[in-house]
Image: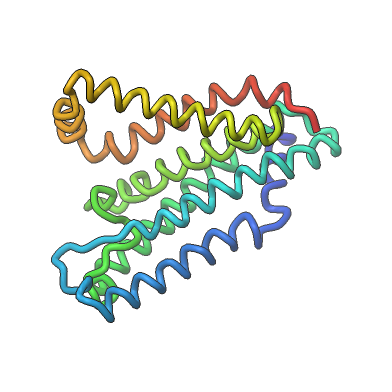
Length: 231
């Protein structure tokens, strides 16, 4: 367990990158959105929201891609096994998700108390991700972050295992998969059923259950790959 904790702490070797860059990016996005909401008719809309907070999720995803591609070789040079590094990364990912979930829940509470920063802006927990309970808000914001982190780790493993060609293969395969599903659903004329199914799900299922399930599936799929990675 000590080795796993040490592997988790490796992700804080450069906190300016692992923690600072995501907040810098989303802060710039937030400032732009606040300005737009104050200076344009966007702020006059009832219940208006923006997807700008996605910048935080995407940046964290990129940070974890780099964690695998840059930190893993360094860790292996310190005689940290691939398995230990993976478990440490998983532990750090869960801690990061809870941290971001808590931070976003606090920001959402401040946003609500200030009337959307004085402009009716719903930024930190947009649309269906805005729930009434503070505890559920932590999970509703943190679970999608865990899914994004799992995607980042998976992309990093593919990059280390197969090189740039692996990333392009992953992108093309993903496009083919989702494109094929779209064609199949259209052919079956089942878009209405898909929409109804999502509409019937609870907010907790959509914002917590599905992202957590995706993160778990990706974690299981990624583990065999990281054991074959070379420095």
